[in-house]
Image (cartoon, rainbow, N blue to C red; front, side):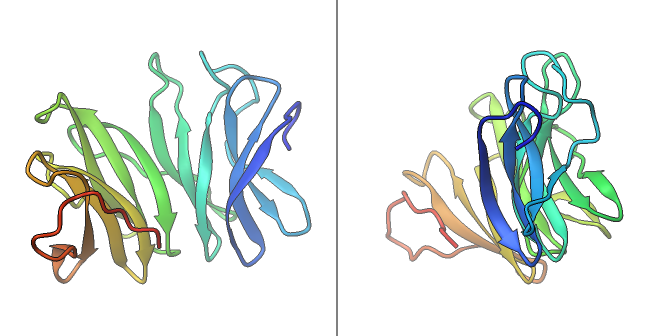
Length: 200
């Protein structure tokens, strides 16, 4: 655990790296990675001190693949909004950015090249928006769902992205598959009501 921390949790492991979070002696959680020998890496290049309501960089690392750790952390702003990040040992922390209309981003999974997650913003039919995103180092941040539906990308393997979406007509969540070649495809058979979510 980090300085003063009493709790920690691991979310994913790949090769020599484990992604997760640790508490500190300041309220909140800090994204961390561990090596399999027990060494802890504080992914946030900021002092362990209050950033307002929570510790600076409050958030968590959610996934790791081929040396790329991803997750989200609060940035220093009046609202302490969350931003998706990537981290590689040779590069350090990488801010994955936003798209127009979004003010927060959360990274949930990576296959080592693609990073996927959710963009949040203001607007849309309910007053807020939640859009699925794909990020790559080459192309940057891209929303893959329109602001007219509520969506989140939850899994990615070899550039194939799984996620959930819902609209007022779907009667709950449905599962989509997205690829660069085919775009967004609803994979739930016609006639099935909503209420689905991918687990892997």
